[in-house]
Amino acid sequence: MPELLFAILSLVITVVFYFITRYVVNVKLQDLQGSDKLLGMILIFITLGEMVYLGTTFGLFTLALEMITSIGAAAVVVGIATQNQLKNTISGISIFLSSQINVGDTIEFDYIKCNITGLHLTKITAITEDGIRVIIPNHKFSEEMIQIHPRNPNLIKENNGGSKVIPRTK
Image 1 (tube, one colour):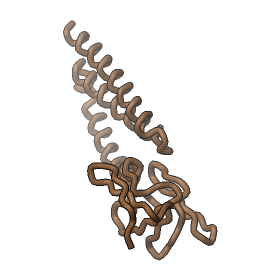
Image 2 (cartoon, one colour):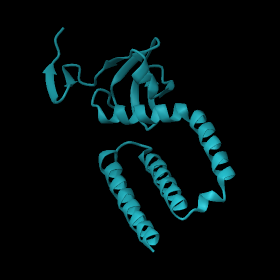
Image 3 (cartoon, one colour):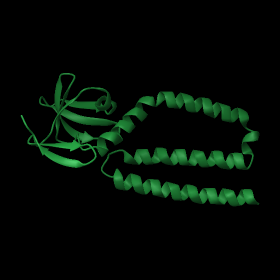
Image 4 (cartoon, helix red, strand yellow):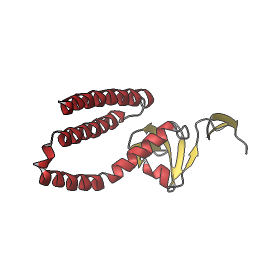
C-alpha cells in the first residue's frame, strides 16, 4: 500500500513539475521559434523519468532486463546522433537570452556579411546584400569569431551582470 501512495505522489509531483516547466518555457522563451520543440523534449524526459521510477517501484524491470539494456544502448545511439542538434539547441537558447545578437543586426563571419532575419532554436537565418539566404547553425556563434554590427551603430549593449547602454567610441 505505501508503494501505491508513493506512486500517486510521484505522479502528482511530475505533473506539477511539467506545468512549472511549461510556464517557464512559455514565459521566458515565448518569442523563440521552436521553443515548443524544447518543451516536447522536456516532456519526454519527464515522462521517461516517471516511467523508470514507477517501473522500479513496482518491480516491472526485473522481468525486462534485456529490454532495458537494449533501450540504454538505443539511447546512447540517439544521443550520439542528436549531439549536434542538442549543441545547436543549447546555443540557440543562450543566443536568445543574451542581448548581443538581434534580428536586424549585420554579422560577418567566414568572409560573408549578412543581415539577420530570424533567430530560431537551432539556427539563425540571414540574408546577404546579394539577396542570398544564409542558414547558420547556432553553435557557430559560440565556437567561432563573428563580427556583429548592431542596427543602431551609436549604441553598444554591454551584458556583464546588467544591461548598461554605453555610447560607442571610435
